[in-house]
Length: 460
Length: 44
Image (cartoon, rainbow over all chains, first blue to last red; front, side):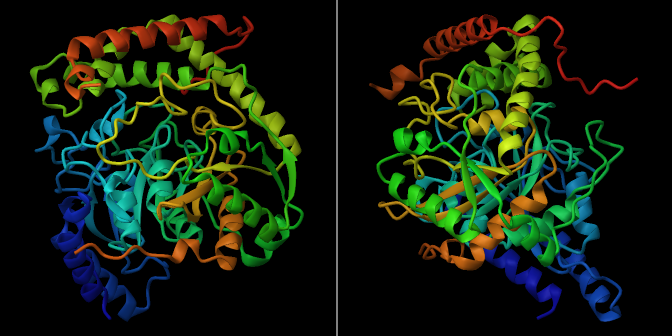
């Protein structure tokens, strides 16, 4: 099969099936064909060695692609078009991948705190395992398109949970890179000090291949770390995994795990430890740091500044979710002392993780402690871990917030199914720039299990 | 609860304000040594 044929088939599939999950924001068929023609030429000339040559993909509609609509999932930006590729998209183009479509997302990546899955220009993200359940957000379309097998991989973004949640809910593997490893140039800014771009795919190995292509220095992003990424060679991966120490608390699953998810999550934890032949050590985040409130203050203040003009314009009323609007408006009122206090407290979070990683190599928890919620269920009622009115976290329940505050990498991967037939997954978090070990650990697990290779029945 | 009640803009604005106040109170109650600077990306 030629790259042109493959790109055409991927676009056909995305066009036909994507709307069933509200996953498609815009099809980029002409671009996919142009990129595929170039890939076929490179294959014939044997001039390219990229493993992504001719591979179709989708990208969260938060990232610009030259000439295509980039709506940020929000009605006020429904006609927005940029004249430049985001750096991550440009890097994938240079790697020979073919962009099949822009994928839906929660409006403005949900920065104001939304109540309903319907908070998106494309409608509620529908889960490929049950279309009456949510796909998770804010990278909703990326999760459901990969989960439904419409694209082999997609790009998502995470400020605090937006790769992890759809990965867990849709049964795909997602990789949140270390802050600064992947350029954010050309991505909608939601929160400058928290935003990260990362891959979502069917396997950890695929995530590593995509990360290698999109990571690296970028003079257009002032927060670029200048570092590159290469997956560990098989021999190095085996050596690094020998005697690997995994930090784990478990109360967040035991006490907060949903009735349908808990048993499968605990089975997954045991299975992972056994397969990696890992040494487990007790490791829990200090309970006296207000992680959720810190994310709340930092995100609200930065998003308030970024979207101040929109918030004070008539177009603001076009946003879909009333709670999100109230949250964004309130962001304009955050006091400098509270924003700066939250920022200074991030130093304590760094120190807490440094102590944790003195005793272990990776930290393990649930991707999400529940399975995908019904589309009609308000996301903030009852209060769940991570929400503004969340109960006091136990164990590592605040790991999503804490890991994002510290800019740490994480990999999210399926570990089975809940009693309701919906996917559940785990997350591993590592020290800064430990993506190689994270990919190696999840890959070792996926070589011995089949959870990640299960696919939902295609919807009629 | 009636969905129309919980989505009333006035109620949501009040709840957002109260949540921000609670957030501020929690942050202010958490000690940070005076020497700790916020992380910054500013590079002259």
